[in-house]
Amino acid sequence: MLLDLIVCHCTLPDGRDNIDIGVQDGRIVALQPALPAHAAQVVDAGGLLVSPPFVDAHFHMDSTLSYGLPRVNESGTLLEGIALWGELKPLLTQEAIVERALAYCDWAVARGLLAIRSHVDVCDPRLLATEALLHVRDRVKPWIDLQLVAFPQDGLLRAPGARDNLVRALDMGVDVVGGIPHFERTMGDGGDSVRWLCELAAGRGLRVDMHCDESDDPLSRHIETLAYETQRLGLHGRVTGSHLTSMHSMDNYYVSKLLPLMREAGVSAIANPLINITLQGRHDSYPRRRGMTRVPEMLAAGIPVAFGQDCCMDPWYSLGSGDMLEVAHMGLHVAQMTSQDAMRQCFEAVTTTPARILGLENYGLHPGANADFVLLHARSAAEAIRLRAARLKVWRRGQLIASSPAPQAALHLQGRPASVTFLQP
Ligand code: FE2
Figure 1 (cartoon, rainbow, N blue to C red):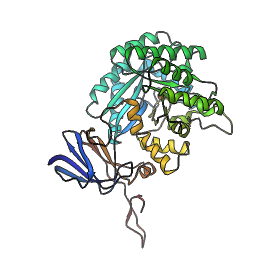
Figure 2: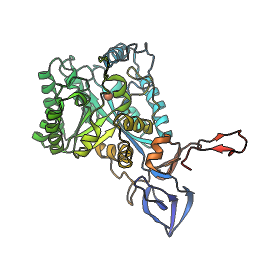
Figure 3: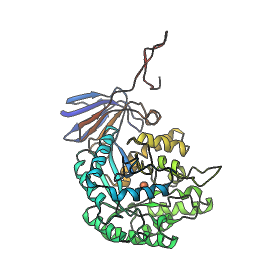
Figure 4: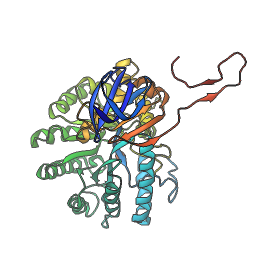
């Protein structure tokens, strides 16, 4: 059998080692030790980790790489970020959004990040960002699966015209229904917005992903309404609550009732560790709350939890580089997920779990899946997180689309090795 590509001697994220991956016509056709086949091209992974591509389940591509425009966020709070974005919106051009988004997608490819769910702000009657990102979605399709969420940043009921704009964005081809109930004028309006948006999604057969309870208010409980509406409308497995930071501060008894309701409704969750740890707890003195949602507790309750990047150099966050291992690294620390199993769950939170949340087809490392995978400079999932490991090679449909050198530092020490690579000896 002559294949297009074999990557041999791979270690997989689940711990299997010495695996050969055979590729033909853009698909994985075999995955086993000592594959009895030849290929036009053979790459020896040398025991290093080969992972399915990284997936970012929560991002804002319309604001990315705009840091400093028109000014920086001085307080560092969510609310100043929203106000700052409001100042920038009238100044945006479609060309500038497209250019910045494409530049970010180049970074993503280099990081092995090949699927992104991006929210796009639809509180602009021109729907400039929507048009721009629909264009970007087509442009990057050969490399990146970009899924767009119609996101009413200024409130579905609070912002004039937001409902019409959101429906227009869906008509234009935006994939997912978004929301922001905690930003509506009242808890009642927030609940009404959740109901209206879930009914809209049910009517159109779409998925739902809402910014939900992104505050430190222990009484912000829109996730309960989201789980209820999911159950009522039969949207099981298609609805996600993003952020859910209020859960950090909720009463423990209430959470013990809430998590089974989420599980029953098949609602998944997305925490955004980089952003949650910098934005939450800003109104506290000390002790200061971390603010990230209850990740290990939700996982233990059977609720899928992904980690998203949320922002990269924009009004809310001045750092980031499309590195989902940085996101997993932060999530691991903030949630104190330090056991071997928990570290593997953190790796899954930026690969297989968000792939399920996005509904990606043919994702993963198994025969029949797309030949999309990443060779990392690490020997295990935990080591990949520890090192934010270099993406030595990135393949999409069996084609090499990015490569990076392995990090190595030269040493000039008597009686010691000439170089170090930071892999566990
Ligand atoms: Fe967000």
